[in-house]
Structure formats: C-alpha cells, structure tokens
Image (cartoon, rainbow, N blue to C red; front, side, top):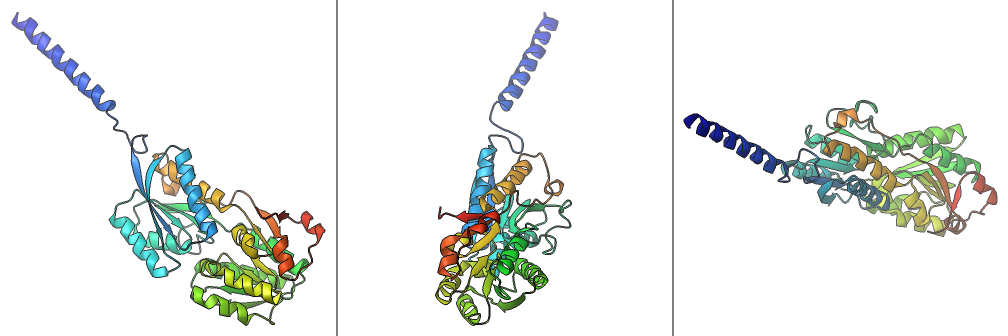
Length: 332
C-alpha cells in the first residue's frame, strides 16, 4: 500500500507540473517579437516637412502590416541640432526597444546616444560619409536603414535644368551644417560643370535666413536648385514666392517640395522609403535579424516629375516633348 500510495503521489506531482507548464505557455507570455509583446519605439524627426512626415507614416504602416504591436514616442527637433541630441538621450533614458531616426542629424544624434539600442534611419543622403555606417553591406553593430540618395536622381534634374531650361548659372541654397546637403551640393556642382554651367552657392544657418538668401540670387542666376536640405525646405514657401515673382525657375530634390511649387524634381515616394525602413525594424523586433545583418537600402523607384503650373508661374513655356523625359504633375 505504501509503495502504491508513493507511486500515486509521484504521478500526481508529475501531472501538476505538466499542468503548470501548460498554463504558462497559454498565459500570453511570448518571446521577443511575439504577438502579445508591445514594443516601445522612439521616433526622432529632424524637421516638420511633408517628405519626412510621409516617411514616418510609411514606417509605422510597415510595422502594422507585419503585425508588430508598438507604442510610439514621436519627437520633432524643429530643425534644431541641439534638440536632436536631447531627444536621443531621452529615448535612451526611457529604454525604448528601437529608435527610428528620420534625417541625418537625428540619426547622428541617436548613434551618439547609444551603441546598444537598435537604430533604423531613413531620409539620409550619405550614411557612410556621415559616419553612420561602415559600408552599405556592412552597416555596423546597432544601426542600418534607407538612404534617399538615388545615384540617378540629381543627375536627371540637373540635365533638365541645363538642357531644357538652358540655364548657365544655377543658384543653390543650403545649410553647410547639414552633412547631407554638403554632399549633394558637391555632386550638383560636378554635374553642372560637366554641362558647362556654373553653380552659385549661398549658405544659411537657420530658416530665418532662407528668404534673404533667395533674394540674393535674383539677377545672378538662371535657375535655382534646392537639395533635400532640412533647413531650407522648411522655409521653402519663401523661395517659391521669390521664384514666382522674379520668374526664376525653381527645382528641388524631392517630389513633395515639387508639388508645393517647384518646376521639377527627380524622386520617389518618401512614404515608400519609410515603409522599407519599417520592414527592417519588423525583422529586428521579431528577432529574425540584427541591424548589422541588414544592408542599407536605396529607394526602390525613381521618376522625373514636372509641375506645369509652377513652370508657367516661373516664366517657362511648357514643352509637350518633356513627357518623354518624365511625367506631368496633375495637382493630386
């Protein structure tokens, strides 16, 4: 009897242990990236701008589509370099699970703040030159993302300016404190000179200086080109106003600014670019990959778009043959 009772006791204990294990597995506890886990993501965006806003929305949509549950702490530096570091430091203090850095200054600040928390960037022109990654295929320990510098984008626009508009002097306004802009201006200068045109550079430090910079180009240039410079694009309305009143064709580095009132841009959807970044984040949060295992990606598409209304407002006669070079913007 004692042996039988002892055997029954062991059997009962075993059943209870199995039941306990079963209840734990069904309690909703999951591993990293599981359906029940909700991640805390810090979003740091350098400036309020339609393209950057679209990239942020694309990022969040990708996570939703991949079934990643997350709460977002969205912060905007309002184009202030000092704010970017404060935001990044706060995210580290809050122990977020991932940082999404939208634009070069925000990505730089995030990497300065942490070498442990995963960082996904977007809207970065030169991630290698900015010191964010070692190489596109080998980004580094805790950071990767998407670049908005398609190798053919600037070339298409400069070719249009010099060949179709016949501009010999091209003005460019940029913030020399933005590394991404310095890289672009260097490329624009090279491309313009190859076409026999001269670049007239004007540098600004704040958005308040943009209007005066645009005014300084009146009478000195045949066209104006604005790169994807966060400081200048934030104050783009003042440049558009001068371009319209003085009949100076204005060109920009991305499609959202083109829609506001520039003649043309060669670009892509920043929503799609942000979506690409979101897919990267989903792989990291789900535990499938580490940032170091995900190469930096280029935009997946590129097109030249011409704003007919802006062209006419800035003194250009629209040529139907331009359809062979790109597509016309219909205002939608």
